[in-house]
Structures are given as C-alpha cells and as structure tokens.
Length: 221
Image (tube, rainbow, N blue to C red; front, side):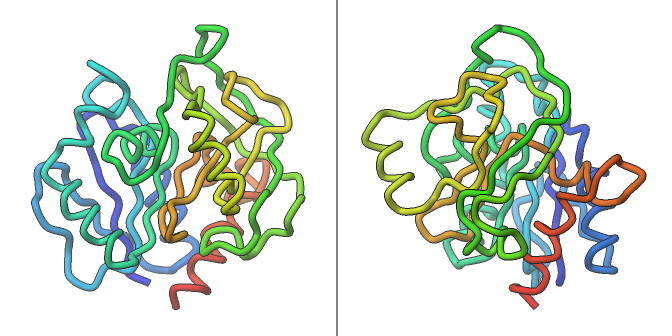
C-alpha cells in the first residue's frame, strides 16, 4: 500500500502517523508539503495528521483546508481513495467539506489530553473491519477544539446511515451524541478526534489503534 501524509506548518503528529503506517505496511509514506498541488502517483491512502496547522488561527483547520494540496486530496477522495483525518486532520476535513459538521471549542473550554474509552459503532467500514461492533477500545486524545457539532438533520442522517464510526464512552468534550468519529457518505473518508496512531505498539501502552491500519491495509491490498 502506497500512502501519503499531508504536512502543514504546525502539524505535530505527521511523524507519528508516518511511523505507524510504516510499521503496519512495511513502506514509508510520502510526506507531502501543503503547498504542493499534486499527490504522488499511485497513492492508495492519504492521512491528514493532527497538530495545530497554521497555529489554529481563524478556526482550527480553516486555513489548512484552503491549502493547494487539499484540492488534490478532495479529488482523490472523490475517486474513492481512502482518507483519514485525525484530530486537527478531522477539523481540516470538515472545513474542506469532505465531512459534515464542525469541531467547536471543548465544552469545558480546556485542553484535554488523556486516554479515553470509545465504542466501535460501525465495524463494516474500510477503517474498522478489524473491530467488532460494540467493542470497547481506548485511544488517546489531545485537543482543545474537539466538540463535534452538527444540526439535528445531519446527526440523524449520520446515525441512520451507519456513518458514526466511533463514540465516546466518556464524553470529554461535549460532542453531540458522544460522536468521536464519522464517515463520509461513500465510506472512504474517516475523521476522528482520538489518535489511533499513538496506540500501535505495546511501548505506547496499548495497541488498539493498530487494527485500524491493519484493516485498512487488508482492504486496500
């Protein structure tokens, strides 16, 4: 699987994601700077990492969503290439219109950084095929603007179409309906606030995130 990790000024989880992908796939991902206008040929998967792109000025992810490379990311997603946005990457994907809703300031107006329990809601997607529906897993979070919000119609549609991928068992940021991660209508774009790339080997204190990347590799390969 040939993968690419998008890098913005202020990204700080791009290397974490790159290491996780290399461990699982055996191949280093292409690190693509935000000012590029094209992705490398033959890319099978795109990761938009966490961090604080553009220092979170204006709104988290808003400026990064308008970077030249995001046009290529959107085109690739429209062709069916799997795309994951983690933490700030989730914010970027909503700002770019690849996912509905918005990530707002945490309900308690404080930065949250700790492992959190999640429930797998959809085990049939490209990203969750190695999990069981209803399974409890733990990913770490590290965000100040992770409060997922959308209008009732959008929330009902996400629920009805099985597009809620992960849900908080402990709602640490005020997200509507405890939503931690969602899929687009085609199922090939996933955005989530928790960090699966930070739990891929025992030294991290857990390996619950590894299966996300292994399932993706198996599906894409």
